[in-house]
Length: 325
Image (cartoon, rainbow, N blue to C red; front, side, top):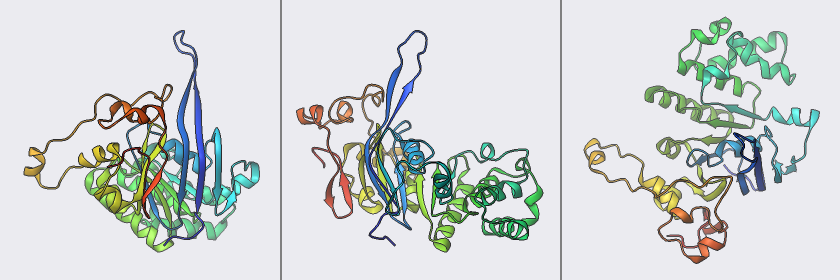
């Protein structure tokens, strides 16, 4: 499944936002990403998990060149695309597509769904005329929708159908990477399972690579080949899904995994969920040393003064912790 050369390779990625002055306060620098190294291998599903505000969506948008990194480098299929601009960037973007959380707001209510699916094909000059109409119909069939519905508008469909339409639009140009940014969280459980099955089916049929962002750790376990855990703009643990779930090494990852509900209702009611003390620090004022140390029961002097780097604990598992379990 994997190749020697990553599909994407990010090194030292940092993103700093300037928060505007508000009610007399001085402008603040918000460190959304703090020196991230990450590889995405062709054909894999890499999941990003972590609390809201940890930088998952920001990292995804840097990788697909939707926003620019403040520092660091980015390569696609071994070619540096860090400073790619203009026509070359537009041509490169056909290989990256994103499916958002809210399918209704992702679709223009004034356009038919057929027009929405055709849009990336037209923008990138991939099809026209009869070939365009054929490709739109083919994409609708691939996501389980009748091509005769292509003249209808988004409000005429259910939430699950609209998300299928967004997926059809994402695969229309035959991309190499699809970013699913909380793409299932707005759906009810039965629809969620069906759309997840669709993601998996399309991956198998077209050898797609996914960057899967989700708060639902049960879904992540089901679909992901590898998991990257983010905290305050950093990747603090990454590895094969089975390794990270069965043997989490970072105390934050351990807390996340221990909170996954169990399928037995009686056992679930009697469970005690461990809680983390305090709140995540502000990205405008991150702590020195390990960003997790103010909430960590095993933190020592080294944790308060020195930033831990990702180190291998096995061939398929890395953790950024001075005292991994």
